[in-house]
Length: 387
Image (tube, rainbow, N blue to C red):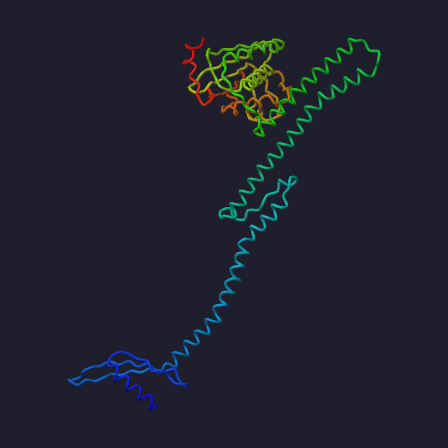
């Protein structure tokens, strides 16, 4: 104790103001001294305050031990808690993954359970369900397409097989019977060829691999050619065809496809028009587009079927105008779907504009198009320059 007092005295003499620390010996951690000189009634005094550092050192040591032990424990607890929270929060993702693995081509009707539509996982589940819905519709469409194609091909093939069996059943048939059988076979083969060609066209269009070959031609001339080509078919049904279009309707498009689209539409109009009525084909120019309307005075289309008639292989009944029975389509049900695809492939549109008791009108809008990057002029601009 005496030694400490002597050291304190020396520190006070050397530090009249401030603080100093006296290192402790083997049994202590030292003493901290704070000195402040003051004057009282003309007399100077020095105020000395001391503090033993043992307690402070003990506290620092306790804190050090606590940190060395507590921090690793805290990190372990935090990691475990984070793992458990992450696992719990990602459990719906695991459930969705397992459910998605169970869904196959035969179980596309199943859906992923949506627990909360408002959070991110709910949005993900909803998006996956919408994707499954689109896939289901695509698979069903493909299955229906294959079934309808098989059905359409089965009938003419059965006719060919039957005629061949009849022709070969006897070796002494007259030539006239063979000619009749061959005529029936020829008609069936033509129908098969048309169906196969249509299926091939639709398959290439779905794959985006149909080669478009645009060229410049006059739409009014093509309309006239199509109308003349269908007049013999219409005459056999007692139907007339009139075509009205201003001259010089210059367009850039795939002429073969446009020709096929127009034939399909005119044939469809003739098919559902009763004898003694007229099919009207007209074209007009509207700015950068051409508008084609094909109207008949026949039976109408039920409102519930106005979009379904553009589905592949769909053949619905049309309601009679007044009295009589409904008329069932006898084709393969590919004419209108192909016609719509051709219009859309050229950047245009095809829809049923009107259908009621007075008849139906199909409308096509086709852009004038461009060739070699040059936009075609308006029809009235080339009228005076055409030779």
